[in-house]
Image (cartoon, rainbow, N blue to C red; front, side, top):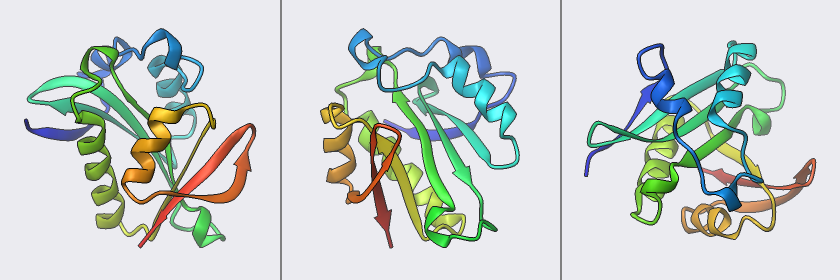
Length: 149
């Protein structure tokens, strides 16, 4: 299966908006529509992408890139990551995360940070399997994880 990240644009925006997580997962992530609005409000740092598997939209990811931010440990964030409920359980999330990590590396990042609720066990297991570790910080009610290289 060919997994790729494509920048969000007008031609794939509706596909992205139609992607949904399971009912149980809605507590962990904003809708893609809300995330797209946040990307537009933060256009100077937000980098939104639609995740495709064999030319089918299966997920969404949004990064924050602030290479000039004063704290080098706080410049690069994975703000959003989701795989549509119809495509979960197939390994697409892990493969997409590998692409996301490669993107960060290729674009000059030295680490990635993200945060999630402690009850989001499936996501935490995915992140840990890729080397992310809790760093002891909290973002609101979410545990912060980071991957350094």
